[in-house]
Image (tube, rainbow, N blue to C red; front, top):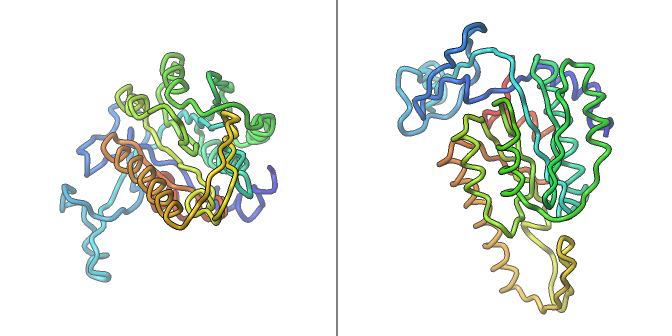
Length: 294
Protein backbone atom coordinates (compact mmCIF):
# COMPACT_ATOMS: atom_id res chain seq x y z
CA UNK A 1 0.00 0.00 0.00
CA UNK A 2 2.77 2.44 0.88
CA UNK A 3 4.23 1.91 -2.60
CA UNK A 4 1.59 4.23 -4.06
CA UNK A 5 2.65 7.08 -1.78
CA UNK A 6 6.09 7.57 -3.29
CA UNK A 7 8.01 10.73 -2.48
CA UNK A 8 7.44 12.35 -5.92
CA UNK A 9 3.71 11.55 -5.70
CA UNK A 10 3.51 12.93 -2.15
CA UNK A 11 5.05 16.20 -3.32
CA UNK A 12 2.34 16.51 -5.96
CA UNK A 13 -0.40 15.62 -3.47
CA UNK A 14 0.82 18.32 -1.08
CA UNK A 15 -0.06 20.94 -3.70
CA UNK A 16 -3.72 19.85 -3.78
CA UNK A 17 -6.76 20.45 -1.60
CA UNK A 18 -10.42 19.52 -1.87
CA UNK A 19 -13.11 21.70 -3.40
CA UNK A 20 -16.48 21.14 -1.79
CA UNK A 21 -19.73 22.42 -3.22
CA UNK A 22 -20.91 23.35 0.24
CA UNK A 23 -18.34 26.10 0.41
CA UNK A 24 -17.95 26.77 -3.30
CA UNK A 25 -19.74 29.49 -5.25
CA UNK A 26 -21.27 27.40 -8.02
CA UNK A 27 -22.30 29.64 -10.90
CA UNK A 28 -24.23 26.82 -12.56
CA UNK A 29 -26.49 26.04 -9.62
CA UNK A 30 -26.65 29.52 -8.09
CA UNK A 31 -25.35 28.36 -4.73
CA UNK A 32 -23.82 30.82 -2.31
CA UNK A 33 -20.84 30.66 -0.05
CA UNK A 34 -21.33 29.13 3.40
CA UNK A 35 -22.59 31.62 5.99
CA UNK A 36 -20.29 30.23 8.66
CA UNK A 37 -17.91 32.77 10.08
CA UNK A 38 -14.18 32.37 9.73
CA UNK A 39 -12.07 31.33 6.80
CA UNK A 40 -11.33 33.32 3.70
CA UNK A 41 -12.78 33.35 0.21
CA UNK A 42 -10.22 32.74 -2.50
CA UNK A 43 -9.91 31.71 -6.11
CA UNK A 44 -10.23 27.93 -6.51
CA UNK A 45 -9.97 26.97 -10.16
CA UNK A 46 -11.37 27.34 -13.65
CA UNK A 47 -13.95 25.16 -15.32
CA UNK A 48 -15.52 25.16 -18.76
CA UNK A 49 -18.48 27.47 -19.27
CA UNK A 50 -21.88 25.77 -19.21
CA UNK A 51 -25.31 27.03 -20.13
CA UNK A 52 -26.67 29.10 -17.23
CA UNK A 53 -23.31 30.35 -15.94
CA UNK A 54 -23.09 34.10 -15.38
CA UNK A 55 -20.96 35.94 -17.92
CA UNK A 56 -19.42 38.18 -15.26
CA UNK A 57 -17.41 35.18 -14.02
CA UNK A 58 -16.02 34.35 -17.46
CA UNK A 59 -12.25 34.90 -17.73
CA UNK A 60 -12.04 36.97 -20.89
CA UNK A 61 -8.24 36.87 -20.90
CA UNK A 62 -8.37 33.12 -21.43
CA UNK A 63 -11.05 33.57 -24.06
CA UNK A 64 -8.84 36.07 -25.90
CA UNK A 65 -6.01 33.55 -26.06
CA UNK A 66 -7.96 30.36 -26.75
CA UNK A 67 -11.45 31.45 -27.90
CA UNK A 68 -12.82 29.09 -25.24
CA UNK A 69 -15.07 30.12 -22.36
CA UNK A 70 -13.97 29.33 -18.80
CA UNK A 71 -15.52 30.58 -15.55
CA UNK A 72 -13.76 31.25 -12.27
CA UNK A 73 -14.76 29.41 -9.09
CA UNK A 74 -14.05 30.39 -5.51
CA UNK A 75 -14.16 28.60 -2.18
CA UNK A 76 -14.00 29.30 1.53
CA UNK A 77 -11.22 27.60 3.46
CA UNK A 78 -12.82 25.79 6.41
CA UNK A 79 -12.28 22.56 8.29
CA UNK A 80 -13.83 19.69 6.39
CA UNK A 81 -14.85 16.16 7.34
CA UNK A 82 -14.32 13.68 4.51
CA UNK A 83 -15.94 10.24 4.48
CA UNK A 84 -14.41 7.67 2.13
CA UNK A 85 -17.01 4.92 1.67
CA UNK A 86 -15.30 1.98 -0.07
CA UNK A 87 -17.04 -0.96 -1.73
CA UNK A 88 -15.62 -4.13 -0.15
CA UNK A 89 -17.77 -6.61 -2.07
CA UNK A 90 -16.35 -9.61 -3.92
CA UNK A 91 -16.89 -8.00 -7.33
CA UNK A 92 -14.19 -5.50 -6.35
CA UNK A 93 -11.62 -8.32 -6.47
CA UNK A 94 -11.85 -8.38 -10.28
CA UNK A 95 -9.06 -6.93 -12.41
CA UNK A 96 -5.30 -6.60 -12.46
CA UNK A 97 -4.74 -4.74 -10.24
CA UNK A 98 -7.95 -5.68 -8.42
CA UNK A 99 -10.50 -2.88 -8.24
CA UNK A 100 -10.44 -3.14 -4.46
CA UNK A 101 -6.69 -2.55 -4.27
CA UNK A 102 -7.09 0.37 -6.68
CA UNK A 103 -9.84 1.80 -4.46
CA UNK A 104 -7.61 1.45 -1.39
CA UNK A 105 -4.75 3.22 -3.15
CA UNK A 106 -7.06 5.99 -4.28
CA UNK A 107 -8.48 6.41 -0.79
CA UNK A 108 -4.94 6.59 0.61
CA UNK A 109 -3.92 9.32 -1.83
CA UNK A 110 -7.08 11.36 -1.28
CA UNK A 111 -6.84 10.91 2.49
CA UNK A 112 -3.33 12.33 2.38
CA UNK A 113 -4.65 15.43 0.59
CA UNK A 114 -7.31 15.87 3.24
CA UNK A 115 -5.03 15.28 6.21
CA UNK A 116 -2.36 17.71 5.00
CA UNK A 117 -4.94 20.47 4.47
CA UNK A 118 -6.39 20.31 8.01
CA UNK A 119 -9.40 18.19 7.08
CA UNK A 120 -10.61 15.24 9.12
CA UNK A 121 -10.93 11.84 7.45
CA UNK A 122 -13.05 8.76 8.10
CA UNK A 123 -12.61 5.44 6.29
CA UNK A 124 -15.70 3.25 5.81
CA UNK A 125 -16.00 -0.18 4.20
CA UNK A 126 -19.25 -1.82 3.13
CA UNK A 127 -20.52 -5.18 1.89
CA UNK A 128 -23.81 -7.02 2.40
CA UNK A 129 -25.41 -5.34 5.43
CA UNK A 130 -22.11 -4.34 7.00
CA UNK A 131 -20.83 -0.77 7.26
CA UNK A 132 -17.68 -0.26 9.29
CA UNK A 133 -16.67 3.37 9.89
CA UNK A 134 -13.33 4.33 11.41
CA UNK A 135 -12.81 7.06 14.01
CA UNK A 136 -11.66 10.48 12.81
CA UNK A 137 -8.12 10.86 11.50
CA UNK A 138 -6.55 14.31 11.63
CA UNK A 139 -3.13 15.71 10.75
CA UNK A 140 -0.49 14.60 8.28
CA UNK A 141 1.01 11.99 10.60
CA UNK A 142 -2.34 10.19 10.74
CA UNK A 143 -1.78 8.90 7.21
CA UNK A 144 -0.02 5.88 8.74
CA UNK A 145 -3.15 5.04 10.75
CA UNK A 146 -5.21 5.47 7.60
CA UNK A 147 -2.95 3.03 5.76
CA UNK A 148 -3.25 0.53 8.62
CA UNK A 149 -7.04 0.79 8.44
CA UNK A 150 -7.04 0.32 4.68
CA UNK A 151 -4.72 -2.69 4.79
CA UNK A 152 -6.85 -4.58 7.31
CA UNK A 153 -9.72 -5.22 4.90
CA UNK A 154 -10.28 -7.65 2.03
CA UNK A 155 -13.18 -8.23 -0.39
CA UNK A 156 -16.17 -10.18 0.93
CA UNK A 157 -19.88 -10.51 0.32
CA UNK A 158 -22.14 -8.63 -2.06
CA UNK A 159 -22.66 -5.00 -3.06
CA UNK A 160 -25.45 -3.31 -1.10
CA UNK A 161 -25.16 0.42 -1.75
CA UNK A 162 -28.76 1.30 -0.87
CA UNK A 163 -28.60 -0.40 2.54
CA UNK A 164 -25.17 1.08 3.18
CA UNK A 165 -26.18 4.67 2.52
CA UNK A 166 -29.43 4.30 4.46
CA UNK A 167 -27.42 3.17 7.47
CA UNK A 168 -24.84 5.91 6.92
CA UNK A 169 -27.54 8.61 6.83
CA UNK A 170 -29.00 7.29 10.08
CA UNK A 171 -25.68 7.29 11.93
CA UNK A 172 -23.56 10.13 10.49
CA UNK A 173 -23.51 12.93 13.05
CA UNK A 174 -21.75 15.57 11.01
CA UNK A 175 -22.14 16.78 7.45
CA UNK A 176 -19.16 16.71 5.12
CA UNK A 177 -17.84 15.41 1.84
CA UNK A 178 -18.83 11.81 1.03
CA UNK A 179 -16.65 10.03 -1.54
CA UNK A 180 -18.09 6.67 -2.63
CA UNK A 181 -15.59 4.38 -4.37
CA UNK A 182 -17.44 1.46 -5.95
CA UNK A 183 -18.01 -0.49 -9.16
CA UNK A 184 -21.76 0.18 -8.67
CA UNK A 185 -22.53 -3.42 -9.68
CA UNK A 186 -25.54 -3.73 -7.41
CA UNK A 187 -28.71 -5.69 -8.17
CA UNK A 188 -30.73 -3.25 -6.04
CA UNK A 189 -31.35 0.30 -7.27
CA UNK A 190 -29.54 2.78 -5.02
CA UNK A 191 -30.23 6.06 -6.82
CA UNK A 192 -32.70 7.24 -4.18
CA UNK A 193 -30.18 6.85 -1.37
CA UNK A 194 -27.42 8.61 -3.33
CA UNK A 195 -29.76 11.53 -4.05
CA UNK A 196 -30.63 11.69 -0.36
CA UNK A 197 -27.03 12.61 0.48
CA UNK A 198 -27.39 16.02 -1.17
CA UNK A 199 -30.88 16.47 0.29
CA UNK A 200 -29.46 15.91 3.79
CA UNK A 201 -26.72 18.50 3.24
CA UNK A 202 -23.78 16.27 2.33
CA UNK A 203 -21.48 17.07 -0.57
CA UNK A 204 -21.19 13.83 -2.53
CA UNK A 205 -18.91 12.35 -5.17
CA UNK A 206 -18.90 8.91 -6.78
CA UNK A 207 -15.74 7.35 -8.19
CA UNK A 208 -17.06 4.59 -10.45
CA UNK A 209 -14.21 2.08 -10.41
CA UNK A 210 -14.05 -0.48 -13.22
CA UNK A 211 -11.55 -2.88 -14.76
CA UNK A 212 -10.88 -2.52 -18.51
CA UNK A 213 -12.15 -6.04 -19.21
CA UNK A 214 -15.51 -5.14 -17.66
CA UNK A 215 -16.02 -2.47 -20.30
CA UNK A 216 -14.55 -4.39 -23.20
CA UNK A 217 -14.25 -8.13 -22.47
CA UNK A 218 -12.09 -10.25 -24.78
CA UNK A 219 -13.99 -13.54 -24.66
CA UNK A 220 -15.81 -15.61 -27.25
CA UNK A 221 -17.22 -19.06 -27.82
CA UNK A 222 -18.35 -21.42 -25.08
CA UNK A 223 -17.62 -19.88 -21.67
CA UNK A 224 -18.60 -20.52 -18.09
CA UNK A 225 -19.59 -17.40 -16.15
CA UNK A 226 -19.25 -17.35 -12.38
CA UNK A 227 -20.85 -14.72 -10.15
CA UNK A 228 -18.39 -14.27 -7.30
CA UNK A 229 -20.98 -12.49 -5.14
CA UNK A 230 -23.82 -15.02 -5.45
CA UNK A 231 -21.73 -18.13 -6.31
CA UNK A 232 -24.02 -18.80 -9.26
CA UNK A 233 -22.61 -20.29 -12.45
CA UNK A 234 -23.90 -20.15 -15.99
CA UNK A 235 -22.57 -21.64 -19.21
CA UNK A 236 -23.25 -19.66 -22.39
CA UNK A 237 -22.00 -19.28 -25.95
CA UNK A 238 -20.74 -15.77 -26.67
CA UNK A 239 -20.68 -14.30 -30.16
CA UNK A 240 -19.72 -10.81 -31.31
CA UNK A 241 -23.41 -9.90 -31.12
CA UNK A 242 -23.57 -10.77 -27.42
CA UNK A 243 -20.36 -8.85 -26.78
CA UNK A 244 -21.75 -5.77 -28.48
CA UNK A 245 -24.96 -6.02 -26.44
CA UNK A 246 -22.89 -6.31 -23.28
CA UNK A 247 -20.74 -3.29 -24.16
CA UNK A 248 -23.85 -1.20 -24.80
CA UNK A 249 -25.31 -2.36 -21.49
CA UNK A 250 -22.20 -1.28 -19.59
CA UNK A 251 -22.03 2.02 -21.45
CA UNK A 252 -25.69 2.55 -20.58
CA UNK A 253 -25.05 1.82 -16.91
CA UNK A 254 -22.21 4.34 -16.76
CA UNK A 255 -24.17 6.99 -18.63
CA UNK A 256 -27.22 6.45 -16.43
CA UNK A 257 -25.13 7.11 -13.33
CA UNK A 258 -23.42 10.08 -14.95
CA UNK A 259 -26.71 11.75 -15.85
CA UNK A 260 -28.27 10.91 -12.51
CA UNK A 261 -25.38 12.47 -10.60
CA UNK A 262 -25.57 15.57 -12.78
CA UNK A 263 -29.24 16.01 -11.87
CA UNK A 264 -28.72 15.39 -8.16
CA UNK A 265 -25.71 17.62 -7.38
CA UNK A 266 -23.32 14.68 -7.08
CA UNK A 267 -19.98 14.60 -8.86
CA UNK A 268 -19.32 11.52 -10.97
CA UNK A 269 -15.91 10.22 -12.01
CA UNK A 270 -15.06 7.02 -13.85
CA UNK A 271 -11.80 5.36 -12.80
CA UNK A 272 -10.39 2.58 -14.98
CA UNK A 273 -7.81 0.47 -13.18
CA UNK A 274 -5.46 0.51 -16.16
CA UNK A 275 -4.95 4.22 -15.42
CA UNK A 276 -2.46 4.88 -12.65
CA UNK A 277 -3.83 6.23 -9.37
CA UNK A 278 -1.40 9.13 -9.66
CA UNK A 279 -2.63 10.11 -13.14
CA UNK A 280 -6.27 9.78 -12.09
CA UNK A 281 -5.78 11.89 -8.97
CA UNK A 282 -3.70 14.64 -10.52
CA UNK A 283 -5.40 14.87 -13.90
CA UNK A 284 -8.98 13.68 -13.84
CA UNK A 285 -10.04 14.69 -10.33
CA UNK A 286 -8.49 18.11 -10.77
CA UNK A 287 -10.15 18.65 -14.13
CA UNK A 288 -13.41 17.36 -12.68
CA UNK A 289 -13.38 19.83 -9.81
CA UNK A 290 -12.88 17.59 -6.78
CA UNK A 291 -9.36 18.78 -5.97
CA UNK A 292 -7.43 21.94 -6.84
CA UNK A 293 -3.96 23.38 -6.55
CA UNK A 294 -3.42 25.72 -3.61
